Length: 398
Image (cartoon, rainbow, N blue to C red; front, side, top):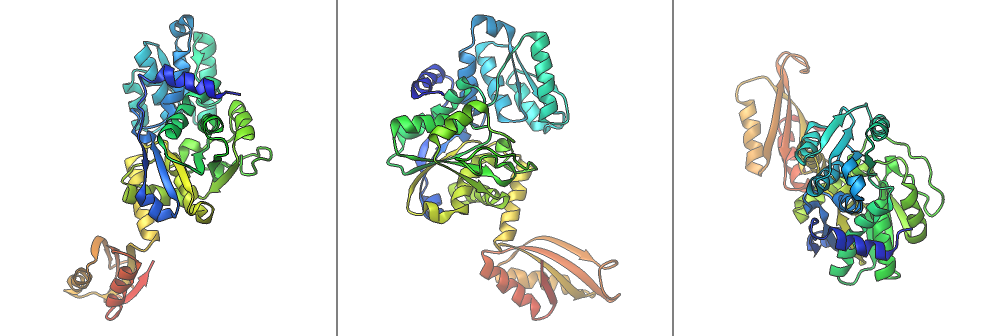
């Protein structure tokens, strides 16, 4: 297993090329969750993720011969950018293999750091097989995203900085994908603050450690907004550390991750990707477990697609009643749309979208169906808007 000295050495090795990100107490999240919340903001790293810590340490440890041979990595996200950036800083030739359907923005960002991007395969497994073949033919050094002691030690520098900068704590809550981050942070916690509880977080579709400390189980797989921790099995090296140094594991539903992204954006004014918000989702899922406790959380990544972020915020608004979707049966005559808009405006509602259908959905040739999306201040205000419209029109909330 990696030890505390490995993490300390990694911190000295990568310090000049890694941002020491802020550790802050979040009053907004503390009020929202009932816990005393401290945040480690690694979404502010140059690549927007903690992943470059491990990549930087691994590349710094390469021999001169290995540097001449170049490196290769497989990733559709943050690890790709971390390897690309630090290979560029060290003058090492880097190849990143990505599945063919990786979003164009991620491909572009990785290439901008100077790596040669190879698109191959329909999924991560096929991309990995191609990377193995390139390793064999080109003699490159493979940089694993998590199942490597040097990478784990590098990720642990996040925990080292956090515990050096934070006040008294009762618990660390860490997202778990391949396990490199929690293994590094748990190693630091065991040395610096013995007795500090370390809890991991996985999403339902990739909860291979849901029975921890019992044996790992097969994850179900599937799509998730927390794609950065969508790993079917934890790495062999991290698992050894997790079994020895991690106290528990929580599983969060997809909706809680979406709500956590929204909460961070609206109250803490922070942009987090799904994996980066997973630990906050744990506080929302099990509030009684953390209420009144001093909890530290890494916001470990902020690379969320703009469209996904927008849709997530809108879905959260709809769920908590601040976005009101109304279906209305209205008479097909002049002035009706103006009357509806006036009523909504007088009550303080903000019309987001209107769809007016005469031909297909209306029950009568003299009627029309109107769908209106309205932004309200809160659920009570939304009901006030609906009630005002019901005095004249047939209204159904959907």
